[in-house]
Amino acid sequence: MSAEDKASLTSAIQAYEAGNLAAARPSLLRLATKYPKQVEVQTATGMTLAESGDLKEALPYLQCAHRLAPRDADISGNLAVALIKSGAPGEAVTLLTEASSQQPDNPVLMIHLAQAQMEAANASAAAKAYSAGARLMQQQGVAVDDDLRHDWAVALLTANDPGQALTVLHAAPDQESSAPLQELLGEAEEQSHHFESAAQHFKRAAELDPSEANLYSYATELMRHWTFPAAIQVLTYAAQRYPSSERMRTALGVAYYGNADYEKAVPVFADLLGKDPNSSTAADLLGRSCSALGGAQQEGCTSLRRFAEAHPANAEASLFAGVAILHQPADKQDAVAAEALLRNAVRVNPKLADAWYQLAVLQQSRNDWAGSADLLHRALQQRPDYPEAHYRLARALSHLGKRDEAQQEIALQQKYAGDAKAEEERRMKEVTTFLVTAN
Image 1 (spheres, one colour):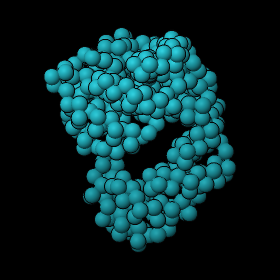
Image 2 (cartoon, one colour):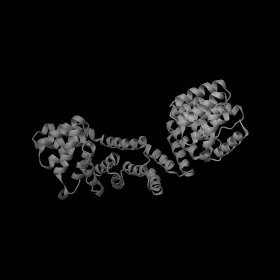
Image 3 (cartoon, one colour):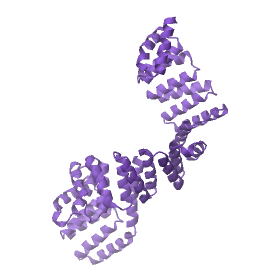
Image 4 (cartoon, helix red, strand yellow):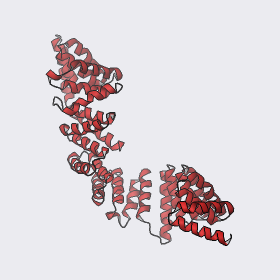
């Protein structure tokens, strides 16, 4: 290489190291073409292009550098990282598996292999590679830092090995003062079914770093185990701190719902639906809350009708909207609209027992006892342990003069009435589980 080109290379590398990629690029591209067998030139060019976001253009230079120096761990790692970012983690795994077999004592290659395995969705293989890399580091007197332990624990948790993840995390000297490690300790304890310990770690993470993510994790951990009052306290604070966080507002509404504070849940979900009129999640949660209020009236429930009419294929929305109308004072009820919504619900989903039941209730308000009996039979076909439906059917049969059958329905109502609380708990758990798994 001429003295002039050496000076140009030195200047370009200095620009690269200073983060001035645009200044480094022209000289490196010229030198890479002129000196195709110069490892330093090919590596610097590939890295400059990669860090500029031009991964497709960078790969040939990094691959060339790897061919020229196949046993250089840094070059192999650089190429592997570029492959991963290019959406080819499998190629990175192949490259690093070969490289680490050639250099079995190189922890850097093993850690890169672990990262590639994680990107390739091979969590168990990643965990083994992290373990091997950490062991090599320790043998060579190199400390395993918190970032590495974090990634290693993530691999173990993804591979469903929370016990080993706890061992890795507890070995971190700074784990008590590290919010990311405390959050992972919470996840590991949760997977291990140590719920109280999990909550304490999530709480500690939120204390160390009250970020939106940490506060949300702590609150959802509390709700996962139905500790709704504590969750409400956390989420009230978090929603004020992060007012633009939709999931935080949703979680607060779910916490109110789980705590049977339906009057507080309704305005939260109504506000979310108002901000996103096409949100089926907000509409569903609002509908559940409005239905749980029974006869109590809430202004926010009126928006359910607009959503249902705009989304006729959503059977649950039609059900909730119809119920909301029927919960209005008699002088404000639009029974025709309510019936249309409920009939649309059973048309879209004939297995929706609550919709058949509500239609029956509407018919009974019109003294159509025979018609209500037919509808209640449809409801009970879908849900035989529906105590309210058995009670309403008993009333209908009594009005129709079928006293013995009515008494049988009363007996069934009493038999299943004890399960009503369990059914409500099931519905609460369904909503809470939806929130936890959705985020």
